[in-house]
Amino acid sequence: GQNIDQPTEMTATEGAIVQINCTYQTSGFNGLFWYQQHAGEAPTFLSYNVLDGLEEKGRFSSFLSRSKGYSYLLLKELQMKDSASYLCAVPSYNTDKLIFGTGTRLQVFP
Amino acid sequence: DVKVTQSSRYLVKRTGEKVFLECVQDMDHENMFWYRQDPGLGLRLIYFSYDVKMKEKGDIPEGYSVSREKKERFSLILESASTNQTSMYLCASSFRGPQHFGDGTRLSIL
Image (cartoon, rainbow over all chains, first blue to last red; front, side, top):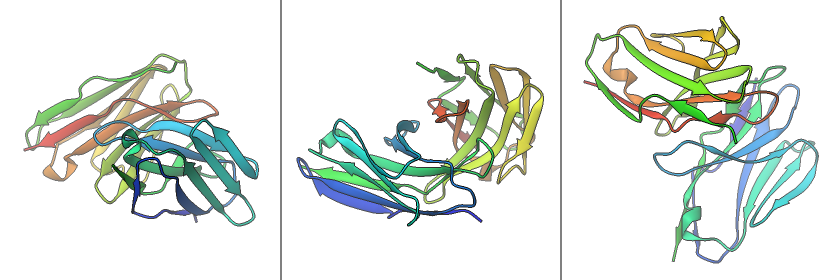
C-alpha cells in the first residue's frame, strides 16, 4: 500500500528557518511533489524531486532520500505570507494519480 | 501558464438536487481529476479521467459521477445532493508532471 506522514501543525517566527518533514511508503517510487495551499485557496505546485539530494529554489528547498522514504521542505527567511498548509504527494504506482498527505499547517508569527 | 477554471467559487444547493460542477483546462492535458477536501482529511480523489470519455473511480466515488466529452472539460455530478457532500471541491489537470489546480468550489448543501 501507499502511505504518507507529515506533522499536522508547526509554528515558527518571521525570519527563521523551518523544516517540514514527510515520510512515505510506496510501491514503485516515481518522484515526490510539494504543494503550498493558503487557507481557502487551491494548492500550488512548489517542487518535484525524483533523485536524491537537495533542490533549491530561492527561499524554498526540497530534499529527498529514496532509501529512507523521506523528504523535507526547507523554508528560509520566513515571511508572514508563508503561513499556509504544505502538502507532500507521491504518484500512485504506474499512474498519474497523486497520493497526498494530509498536509502540515505552518503558522508564522511576527 | 496552465489555467484550470472552475465554474463557481461558491455554490449553495438543496438536499436532493442534481448538482453540476464544471472544470475547464487550457493546456491540452490528458489527465483531469476531481477531489474533495475536508478539514483533517486532506485531499481525497473522487474520480479521474485520462482521456476523453475515459474515467476511473478514485477513493470516494459514491454519490458522484463524472463526464468528459471534450478533452478540456471535466464535469463532476452529484446525482442527488446530500448534506455530507458539503465540502471544498478541487479540479486538477496534468500530463506527465505536477497537477495544476483550479481555485476550488466551496459547495454547501442545505
